[in-house]
Length: 145
Image (cartoon, rainbow, N blue to C red):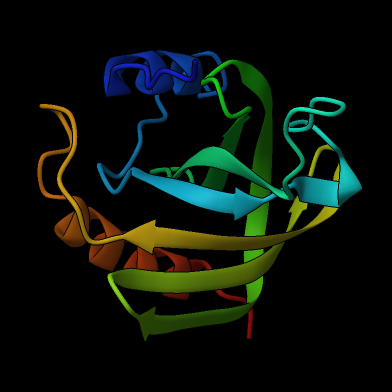
């Protein structure tokens, strides 16, 4: 049975990847994201087969984008620390937005494709829609050229 972790767990994950004096821009969103770089992190043989995972995404005061990826049970997998954004596309769709962009990370170039729902969850991210809109604006400021 899958369970959803409190959003503070996700924020604690980001703390491990923030540089000294760096903070998030308070634009964190919880998203359904395509598995990055072809990694099969959400599959169980014979039980579950999907190409999506959960991701917690934010921009930082140092001009970086952080993408913390979790499996379908909320277990932390990997954090991609991106510098610069290009090919940003944000489209409204039923119940939320599809957002995609490319960023350079410590593991190489990462194509991010995610769906962010217009919903409320947790106590520290009560206004998901406002966070999503702030994230899109901040990604646009990180966009190259």
